[in-house]
Length: 314
Image (cartoon, one colour):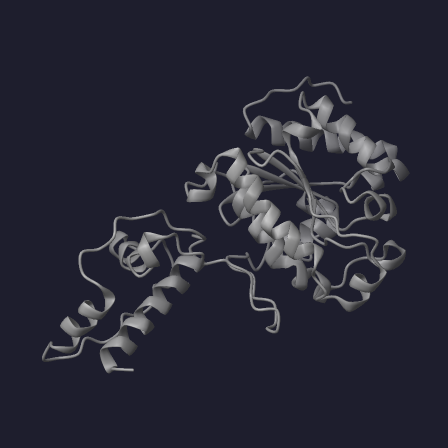
């Protein structure tokens, strides 16, 4: 490989990484450039002095010329998938843009403007189905793959402005292949209805796609194995708010050790999406008095979505 081609590849790799760190997962189609990559390489090699490869920006979005140069390298102007799944033989990719500690966000974050946010329903469903099929064949966690009845991917509106994130499927979910369908799921349905929404208006999913034996808590390794599936789901749906149900979902998404009691009542951010935390419906079945706290949390979430709820608890 020539020095000029090598330098181009280094530049491309650095800019893809900087885009990924900025939360950009897909790039729009662009018009085909007039000159080919080989012509550009020849032109660069003809220069008298080689240009050093640019350094990666530490923070902030990449400049427009960075985006254009990366997009131009894609074949025929096709979108570049930065956040695709890692090879099966490789270790799961590290999570991008995760806060090292859960810090409340005071200002409203603008909704994503990437290609996924503009996809129509059919295309989003098709994109989700590709990941669903990968999940159904996944054997990254040997114990879970050997004990599950089926995987539990997620269900709901692919254009949902609100996602509910739980920790893992239970026995009913493992049997039916749908999240939150047992007693806790029925209570979640009532919470959604009290918020003037329907189950089909939101999207419901879990950190894990397989039921841990005995409904034990997910291990960090299991959560890491499932993480790229979850990230890609959220990239496609691109909700305005993610509501974490329970401490495990909240701690995993926000990468924090804070208790759910400490996390409640504030908004956080994950890759440009607002995150709220509240108690898991299963906890409410054991502690009905906490329903008033959940109702307070849901009023906060719905206010963020532009919906005012009655002040009375449900």
